[in-house]
Amino acid sequence: MPTKNPRLNIVIEPKLYSLLSKLASSKGLSLSLFSRDLIKEALEVREDIYWQEVALKRDKNLSRSKSLSHKDIWK
Image 1: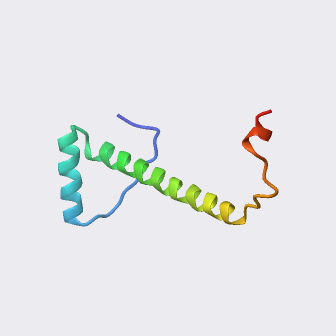
Image 2: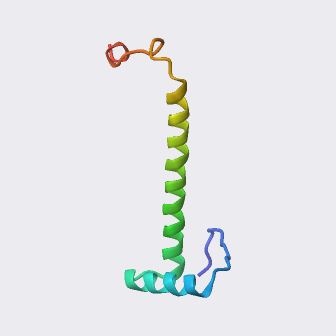
């Protein structure tokens, strides 16, 4: 069945392929769907790391004297 979703071909080591295949099988998923889900999960982790770095950078430059209190914001 044709799909409109883009396809991705990757080259991986035999040991990694075997592990992915076993894990996918244990979850009852195809290798493709299992790999897709792992990629999504990895991207979410990367996004979290990025936003954490942004927050830490902002926190270093935060001027407590110029910031508004919770009470002032939610009047």
